[in-house]
Length: 230
Image (cartoon, rainbow, N blue to C red; front, side, top):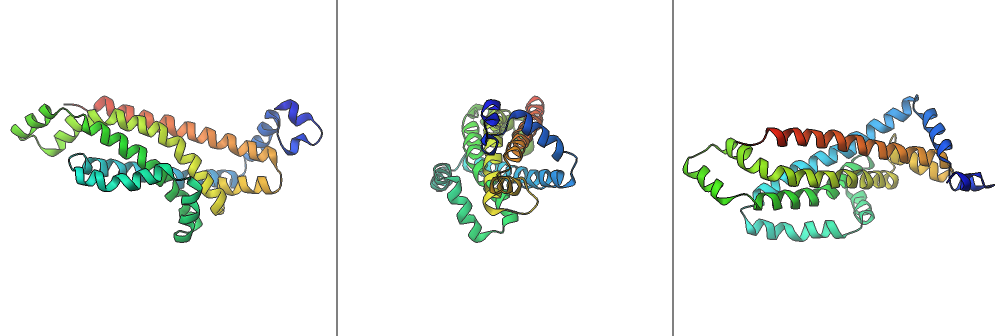
């Protein structure tokens, strides 16, 4: 990469790691940088949390209802198979640019969360459920003592995958929708003006944000897994 950037004219196509790092250091003190990071993080991670809540709720409702599983199967399969760009363009017809990245992030996160949690709940030991019914264990204790220990490992696996997906999809939605004061807008501007160091610097920011949010969220899930149980 550094050699390619050193070729005359090569810096327009490929910035060296040093150039990207220096540009990132220039961006860090600016208010606009942190505003873009905050805006994108709130929308993209907000969409992720919405999808986690909705996917877990629908998985819990569908676990004992085959008719609901059949009803949800076609739209879930469509979301899994269709290109992200198609959903972004369609969503622009219904939503404003500010809501687009939140919606697209949630849409991409929903299938893995729903399917994994549903798979976990299906593996719940029926003998434990029968025992809970016989002894009339309250619903809250059943959820925390029986369902949660079974579903949380599946939820953790889904979250690890979905956290990467939500940043990819959410940033792509920002690049197309161009909401002001976001990382996606900065990426688009860097591309238009051939600011390759900016492009690499903002890409590094996205990777860092995805890694930080993944570590923090999975640590929280691990904490729940340690507390869940009888």
